[in-house]
Image (cartoon, rainbow, N blue to C red; front, side, top):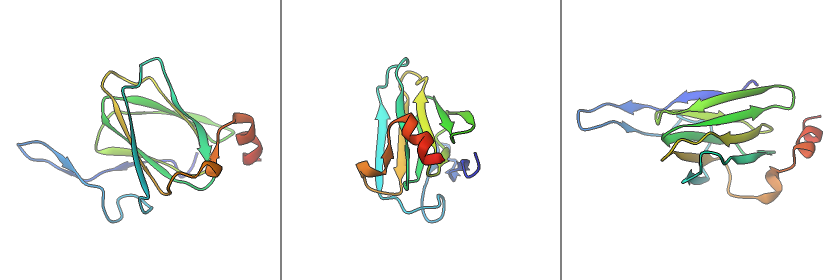
Length: 131
C-alpha cells in the first residue's frame, strides 16, 4: 500500500474562520478535473473501481466517510473527516467510499479528465490487471 498518503493541506487560521489552499506543490499532480459527492445516503457506497493512469486526491470538505483501499493483496480503511487533510490515491488501487455521515461532501481532484478506458470497474479485471 505504498504511495497511498494522507497529505496536510495548508491551513490559515483566523478568528473569522479557517482557510485552506491547494496550489503549487501541495499535491503531486496538475489538477485536470474536479468533482464532488454529496447527499450520499449513509448506507450507500461510491467508487468501486480503480484507475490505470489517473491519480486522485480526496478531501472530506464536510462530515466524514471511509475509503476502503485495496492493492490486490492488502486492504486498508482510512476515515476522512478533516477539510485540511486529503488522501492521495495512486494508480492501480481499488477504492470504495462508504459510511457517509449526514451532510458529508467528498471533493475529488483528479490528474486527468474523464476517460472511460482508464477505469477498471470489475474487481476480477482489477485482480488480472494487478498480476
